Length: 210
Ligand code: AMP
Image (cartoon, rainbow, N blue to C red; front, side):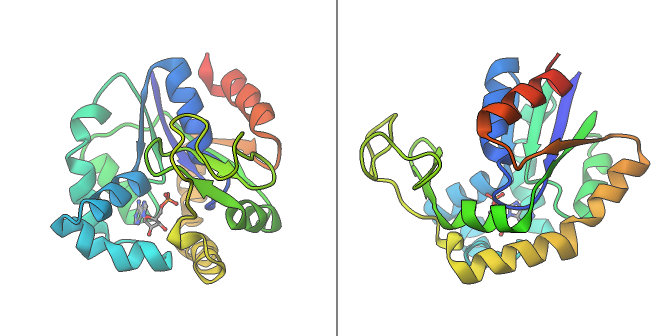
């Protein structure tokens, strides 16, 4: 079975790699950050509750994230899935077990803090395709337009310097303990995420794709 969670700081490339692997293995890619941004854009009641947390880079309260995730539980009961950005604390990891959502492997994207800051500060985002670019490392073919749909690329609100700093702090304070949590269960797989997108693709596929 291919049921993974992707762990690691913001900007480690979890979303990009989850997109790649879910396509290649025909499994579901579920990003709680993406689900939250969708709720926020659509101005739903849950989205309005989540907005301020997402913009400052704090964790959205567990009950809101779990509520949003529950709507997608049907999908995550399939044969394979990648949970990207969930769980982000021990209570959320325990809630997976309560809902009998199995984790075969927790893939940790290991990366230096300086690399994360560089990646997040230059990051560009297509609000339609939900794809990420980077002004320096992965520029779009046409200036500030999505290669796929041509739509104007934007910077995420939480990719400003103050929120970036906060998101990294939140990761080390609240999410980092999950490394030990999954290590003790014998499920942790380390990936060196300082490398190029292509190098990580290859390694990831070799390690967990077969
Ligand atoms: P991401 O797209 O994974 O970088 O997530 C963007 C933002 O959404 C985070 O900074 C949090 O504010 C929120 N978020 C995403 N996933 C979770 C989660 N599992 N628990 C709490 N907040 C989350």
